[in-house]
Image 1 (spheres, helix red, strand yellow):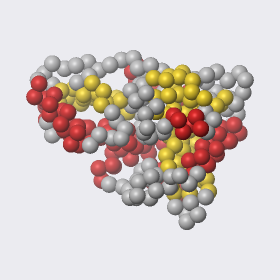
Image 2 (spheres, one colour; image 1 turned 90 degrees about the vertical axis):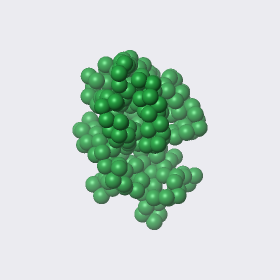
Image 3 (cartoon, helix red, strand yellow; image 1 turned 180 degrees about the horizontal axis):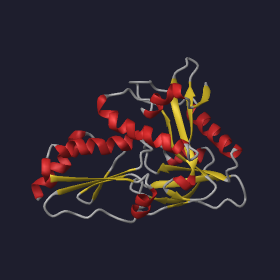
Image 4 (cartoon, one colour; image 1 turned 90 degrees about the horizontal axis):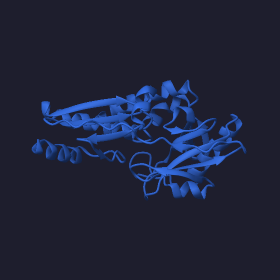
Amino acid sequence: MQILDLTEKHEKTYFLCLEDWTEEMQEAISAKENWYREMKQKGLRVKLGQNDRGEIGGMIQYFPIEHAWVEGKDLYFISCIWVHSNKAGAGNFQNKGMGKALLKAAIEDARSLGSKGIVAWGTSLPAWMKASWYKKQGFIPIDSTGFLGDVLLWIPFTEDAVPPKWIKAKKKPEKSSDKVKVTCLSHGWCSAMNMACSTTKSVAEEFGDKVEVTEINTFNRENFKEWGTSDMLYIDGKKVSMGPPPTKEKLRKIIEKRVRKK
């Protein structure tokens, strides 16, 4: 096994989150690529896990916390660590130590960059990026909030490191009396989150002028400060889970139900 720094050779694999490409993913992948190009200038680091056959099976991305959706200073923030588990596409690479190796490499890299600590987020539910896994790797829970019971964890490197905090959601979308209102907040960092937005917009188009769609780019820091949330999907003011991305069938059912009530 090898841990590699991301180079141009593997950029497309990274943008796709190691999944197979489909035409429906194009908008989501483009958004991830645009985010990556901008964040490279702000200190984004990406490492990939490669097995002995030369296959890429895992990734981790992290960057200065000042550009994240949590409050902190002089720390690095892990927005995503992912080891492919589906039999389709890249195949199942989990339970072989790749995740631990990626995390160790990121911690060592953050130390070498002079960071005062490294921060991660995980869910308290048995889902993607489990907080319990980070705890086993030595991370300490420091704050919790969020739609999925999100937990903020960290490893301080110095005694003067200041603990990070979640930034709480602020603004909520206004409801519309005559139309179904879809509001999608998107930061661009996650292809799956981006996919949730693009799929919702596609489904909303099926209902014509009965549905109003507003898309908000929270990578724009002013927009983020206004909303206090990086990625969120609202349909008539109610949150819809974005992870995993909702299917067209699920979104169509939700929107159709709301349309009938107008």
